[in-house]
Length: 350
Ligand code: AHG
Ligand code: MN
Ligand code: MN
Image 1 (cartoon, rainbow, N blue to C red):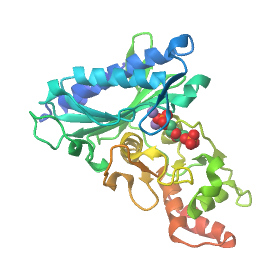
Image 2: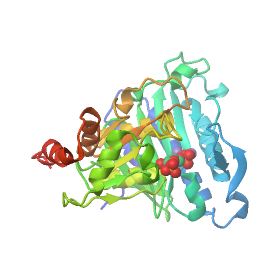
Image 3: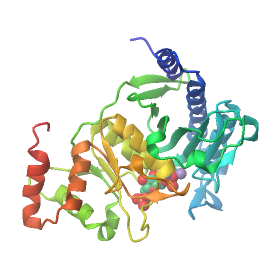
């Protein structure tokens, strides 16, 4: 089979749109390049003492920052500034957005989580980079503004992630389906390995930090109880890596639901709308899945702050619908299983 590289794939898609200027294509290629550099730095993490471990800094979210978070942040920032297509960035690791003074004419802003699941690095578990691209709303030729970044997820023109695991893979969408590219380290290219990814409508995997069970909202508790109940003879599996990219990636390909509800410690949810939930919601919807905060579609949430957090339930359509269904219905445990069977599992699509 002929190998199609990421850069080639972007060029082929651009040709399908005669109106395209190539600016977004260039931007995506630069994100691909940045992730290869991050991948290289990560692969040395276990060997080089200087870059492994804590950076003795606290990020704007009040969390401990690992050195590689900072390195990945700098790599992405530099690559995007060098790309002529990006007028500014916002990052989980930056207090405020950064307007590129030498790129006032550029059309796009990029928001990113440079290293997701970074606490996993010390134990060599998968981590990732997540990105989200918007077209600016301010006038080209001037410095970009906060309004360029605070757009609803529906306005994203591209989004994706890179997972650094047993292989490194880049998965992205521009609103025309989801495609995945695995890095071939021998040639240093991302190669199309997972064309047109679709998430199965239903599945048997749920992903949640169940240690927080006692502070979950009632519908989430019911859902988790249902997943664990043996009387229904449906064996569900709990899979939780603690790195959103890795948990999401598994569920995107195999089906399942990833949940991070509001909890006692994180009353507004833990994950960030702009850097984590919006890009993943765009991908998940493009792959036929769903993403909600429990009451509202993630992509319709109007952001008020760059570092805004939200509860998130994302994955296979039927799974997410079931969870939301529990929200709207008061069910006692005896009725619970009939409700689920009728609402979800009697559906002929399944
Ligand atoms: P980050 O490393 O960018 O701060 O993200 C960590 C996030 C996310 O990747 C993961 O799903 C979640 O934190 C895990 O949180 P818990 O340890 O509370 O389960
Ligand atoms: Mn993260
Ligand atoms: Mn991070």
